[in-house]
Image (cartoon, rainbow, N blue to C red):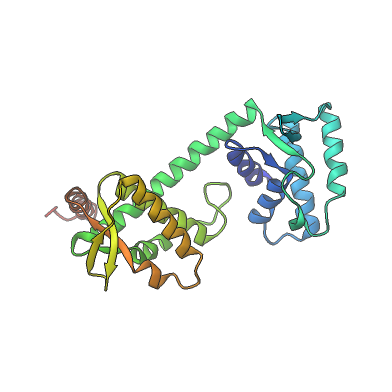
Length: 263
């Protein structure tokens, strides 16, 4: 079903906030960027009608006193959606939030959305663990600049369908950098700080949560630059004793998998 990734994306994001026709059209563009305007128009219409017809979301208006569903039967809702879709601008990217309708997730849609969210969480947990196991042993000799973590993330890019994959390789790599950094800090495996010439290390004097927030901001800023390298080399992490023990255990397990004897 071609609309499946669009529907899953809208339900996944609809768990946290109201969705709108804008979100359906944007998801269609993101998952099918080669579609022309008419193809995108038809597929997004099919997706929003599916969400309503299958009782996954309800269209309505968002007012000061909250969400108000359209006071219509389901068939009347679908006809109104078709009529509103005919009025969409030639450039679908000109659509704004709330135009046509807002969408509230139903109990049925929430159940499916949570199943999707669990699948997404498991997907990224596995990927984060694998990337962490690649990066951690690199810190046994010296502090690791974030540029090395960024380099390793390239091997974990997967172009697929659905909210767990995200839209572009760079968006996946940014997310993975954040997840790995969060694990390093939260699990006490590494300290984060400034690097001078890739060798000298100055720890950030911050709580773990402050360090995580600061790292997210810096990673987000770096991914907005065309040349990420210089910025990502200016800071990084140094393994704690716990992190060193974990890195050595990873190397021992790697030796066993490769058929050798652990040293």
